[in-house]
Length: 458
Image 1 (spheres, one colour):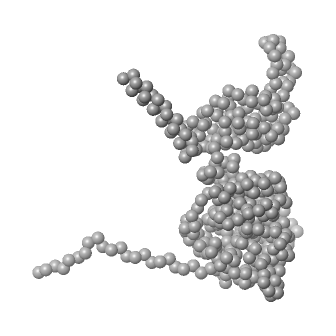
Image 2 (cartoon, rainbow, N blue to C red):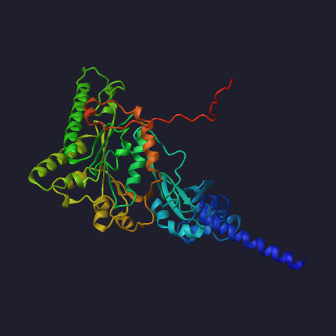
Image 3 (cartoon, rainbow, N blue to C red):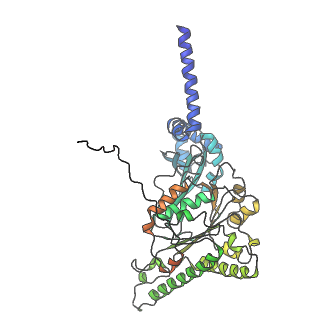
């Protein structure tokens, strides 16, 4: 009997260990909520002062405090760590605010983030500046980019689309009002199409004009034709569509100028320099232009095609330089975008403020996307593994960058979203000739009766 109890105890212990290991590997979020969170909180509370001291994040206490300690306790006065606030658990980690000690700065904590990660047994530690003297430590308990789950409150709004998840478990929001134009680079099967798919599905539910240029015969953007106001599937069609967009931009500038030319006594709040200052009833709908495989617009084989290419590039540069005030935004995608494409390529790339680089085939491609705004991110873009499609590095003109990953959405689901929101597409008469053909939905077959009538025999 004693042997059976011993075997049962050992078996239960091994089962608990095995179940915990399986939970940690297969369901990291559940493991964090049940096991990882309590353990990390206990480590943090028990070793906070010693860890801060070991990381060099403590300072000498004020003189009055040192005198009071010596007078009352006669013990040695120890250095003081940053004052810790309330620990706030989250579904992916912990959040905690710290009040910096005199002489400290947020960079001191950021430099010790790797040490804090190992000391408290979490996946990563990030530092965010809240206000002078106060920072927030965000502790992430597991790799949130392995299986992407977007936050419930991601901050979606007009021209704001939560399109990916950052490595610090916050949403990466594509905000066209803040970053008007963006360049998205990535090799084949890197997840670039998935990023574009999430972006279109998010914008489809908003009153935004969606225009597409897909010179791969429309294989990428044609499934979303029900929601697109215009679609060009060949360079010849793009050469006709781009002048129409430029003319639309010029008409909007005329509308803005007419508002600026009001009477001298007009209040300042009625004078505007972009469409967002116009009254809502006069404001034209914003336009988002998607250009997939931009290199196809640059490649030429004859002199005639070269003239057409120069004209298209000129129109794109004008839209990039002047489109923001008119409410026209660019989303340019491709595998490479360097000076070797031809005249105007570098000038157009310089106008694209946002940069997203998926897995690339060489370092030069990563430098084209991130080298001129965040050089430190180039190596991170080159180290993206092929077995993690959708993983990318997003940079901005401030020099900051972060790893992001887009959630999976099937092509059928994205296309269904576009079909369901087709009625939200604003009417732009100038784009009517470029409206893509949408085949009618197949008629549903009538349901067969469950029983067949029998003739009545008299």
